[in-house]
Image (cartoon, rainbow, N blue to C red; front, side):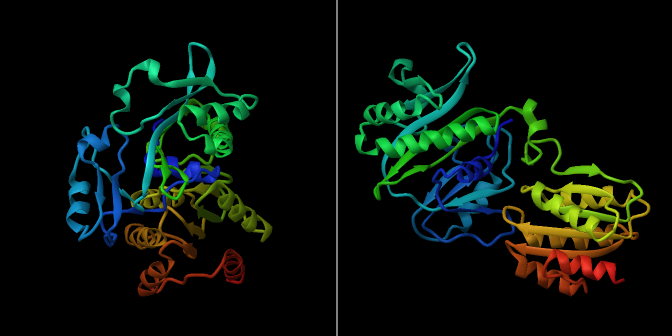
Length: 351
């Protein structure tokens, strides 16, 4: 399963790997100001050569944004763009970890020159070495010498440890950073990232909710006779929501994690599942907006009320990305936005 760049970089950041400051841009969003790098979020490779990555140093970004949303790369149109800070680059390298099936090891591969032409390099030019927890200390020195940045030996050792942990804990088949950037401010940054996960290991990762997966929500029936349905994002928050319902002596009907890449359409489908529970008389919606935007959740709630006449009472808590916009949208529909989960529970139990 190939991840989109923003998904891969979010995982890298969780493991402490430096990535550029960025935001995810959808077609209806305000365009960012220059200087900026705009990157089409598609699963196919070759974005750079296809014109899917644009560097804008000055001027209006509207035309470029529209062009990228209309540009199909190998038959795939982007649903979003990644808007990133413009890095000041001193050197560009290539760095990857992959499963070497012939030798049954995790292999570190590097090249002194990164960028879109790296695949044309001769095989013997690449640095290759098995990477294990025991070899990382040595590899930091060896890789620093190969890349001709000996002063970065300790930084590379630390980076390799983070990448190795990320690779193993996420059941990764390929983690490729190209370009791997050394900035003029002497910082090592993952300028781009391609990550391929082993879909066969998905059963070990209930947190996986990537755009390429067949479903964008983790829906588990807890009790078909339950009276309270729950919608949340993130496995931890979803479990906490179910636990809060149970602690209030109410019966949760389901566990539902809409994930970080949830769309308006996907959230509406979640409501469609919930209304099949005939005894549900209340829905608690508990969202912390990060990648998923609170105003998108609000729009989905409003649309669901229009589509499903039998929708139960809603107890909504939204905070994070675009929560102010969500509050305005919900207010226009006379829908109450609660400050936290306990407030939702309290209101529900007193009705």
